[in-house]
Length: 143
Image (cartoon, rainbow, N blue to C red; front, side, top):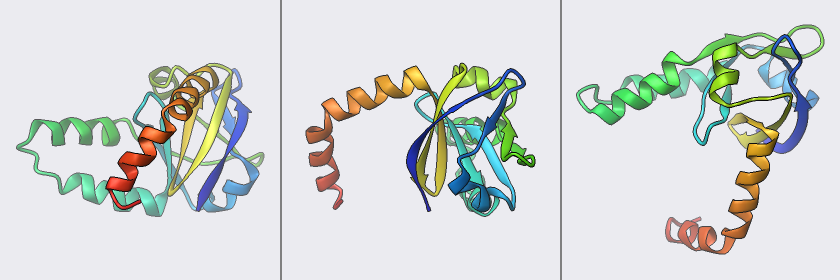
């Protein structure tokens, strides 16, 4: 399970050090892809296989299904960590998420999210500001 918020740096070669507590989970392989809200998603190989199967089973006759599958699948890249626990984030994914030097790696149960630091701070402030409203809506969903 991935949880927590970690501040890291993307170096000039596009490498990001994965937080130490997550490295073992990702050692068997990982996939990074375009996420939602202008961030990147990182999945273990096992989680990615489950998600990709669900995406492949969406009805391709529906435009939204095709668009979402393209967003997630066509943008995906297998990544492996080096001896220092770094992964290379492809340039097209760094561009998609507007990743500058400082990033946040956030654990969200079955995936990691990689955010540009400024975008994360803005998103987090907005979410915290609306937390009561969000909690009410989650209550309606049984959370």
